[in-house]
Image (cartoon, rainbow, N blue to C red):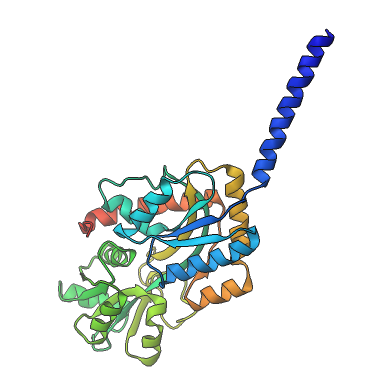
Length: 325
């Protein structure tokens, strides 16, 4: 009996030791640099967002947060890289949720699954788009644009920074809900798209709200509508499209995700640190200046939002007939 008791005691100590070691391992996260992958080129709004988050996370976690830009293949290059990275919390993706949802419908053979290969961590920010017009266009508000498009089918055009982008799909959603056909004209970037609208070669543009604020203030462009459910605090005089077309909503919504299989304690820790980072006054001020609204969530809430975006964009992408460039 004493021998059996001794064996049981050793087993118990072993289990307790293993449990404590596991707890210490979890508590030690992070104990090396974290990589935050951005699927866009350096210098743009997404890069500013990612680097603002990374800088503050470095302070909060006590570890360097290395921001890496991996543009290409419509954000699929970065997404594939993170999806195939170790599920240990040291490689994260700054995901533009709408773009991922559009890609899922647009690319017939993705090398990853948005739902299956990513663990949601948190929403982080959003920004609206704006439908703007050259002042020479006879229509001065959305109701007049819709009426003009119906009376002149195929004669109205709208410019965006590229085919298959959330801006393009935002225009197609407007066509769908308003029952019109405003023709899409893709450009390689927002600057050339706006130049042609300013020059009168194209009547309308769907672009990021921050990029047109200066033109709205000087009257070089007319604000037809912003795509968020609330008016932009940077341009409160521009109505939302939803004020004319109930249910219309398109936002550039950003989130942080990790590879599927990342331990739940790590996800919980990252979620809490992201919230602290984005509640920092300096970070909030910097991002507000870039047209971002802070937008936080639980991992489960982000998972639900991703599923809703996949459901929303699939029929729009298929109806538009857009193909990968």
